[in-house]
Image (cartoon, rainbow over all chains, first blue to last red; front, side):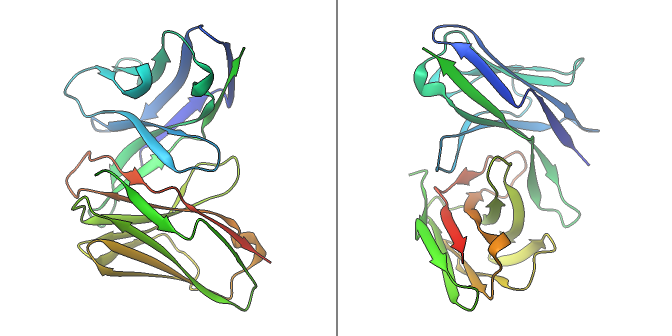
Length: 116
Length: 113
């Protein structure tokens, strides 16, 4: 089964500083990878996705992620943090179930705090 | 329109009540999902519907009963729940083909008393 590991359950950065959230995946086949953001008491919003078209993926709100097969990583970055970026971030991998359906497997999440 | 709507936003129910959660999407997606999310945890998949047919049940207790009346609607019927079932229930939808992202609704915050 495919899986993702998010290193660091909590990350704090100063406003204007670089944001780096780490995600490593385990997959026997080229994966489909996603980053989602969840603000308090809300659903999940898709930030970006990797589907093998390009290794550097740009998403919404200034976020981007780079797929590195040699490192089995898909880290999320943003050059300059904004207070509104404070949220929970989930990395996810898509896999085909035994019944042929696609299902998402989520990492444990990283809570991002922005320091004024 | 990339919106998935869920009603109600909040629900408080006793252990003997019967209630239903509703989810709707108009993006033409033929896969719809129910997730359960406890505080500070990632979403856990409960059910998957493909072309209005139940295709995945992740060993969910029978007190949760899903229903997909048509390609736009997904219900989750609740009966005789336990306090540990209190959680955020999220609905999502996607296209069927591989690598398609799931779009999530805002969730229903369920409290079982």
